[in-house]
Image (cartoon, rainbow, N blue to C red; front, top):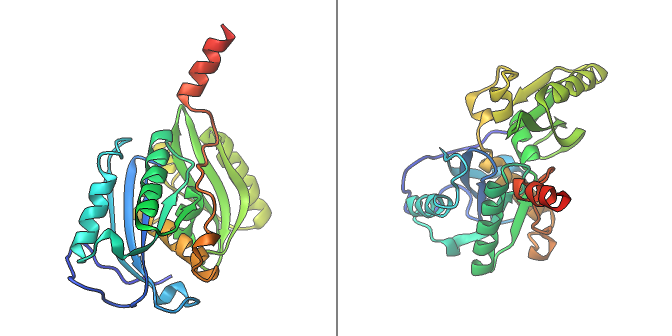
Length: 261
């Protein structure tokens, strides 16, 4: 997918397509990402005709609540926009850090309710996998889940947004996941491209561009915009805003341990 991009400049007005603005948030990992797309006026145009206007990532650990809205405000200001210009808010729904995922969902819902626009959640692993769109390979995005584990899955990604799940999202040790990936790659007679924060943590990353390992806010926004566009840009078609956690939080584990005593 070829995209046009601008960074860090206040444009003072729209450039490229003249349709709706779409904001994307990804807050589930150590990297916080915010992205802004402009779509054409008419629905049904391919993503190659869209414009990625801006994207910002920042390493914030798990301290996203104090920075995500500031990043959104700064991005909109750079392009002469206000929140009222947004037509769709997209957010990663995990898996990822519990606090980060909650912050992203809560921020998106707050913006959506305040602006009267739809909120469209997107699975975070599926969004990261879009880096490998069109590659003849098994695409394996990994997030560092801490506790010696990764959140991971494996996909075949054809045309941008057309994603087939080969290994469903799971939280396991990296060794366990990579064993399943090798078996799936052999069956598919395809190489595996492994990337993301988990791949870096456990030294299993393939040779890919550095930004493939970072937050994928651009893909969160684009996948949401694709789904919204295919639904005729109908706000009522937006899916439920619910998180994907895959495992219990520390607080849940602690409560269950106390209950068993």
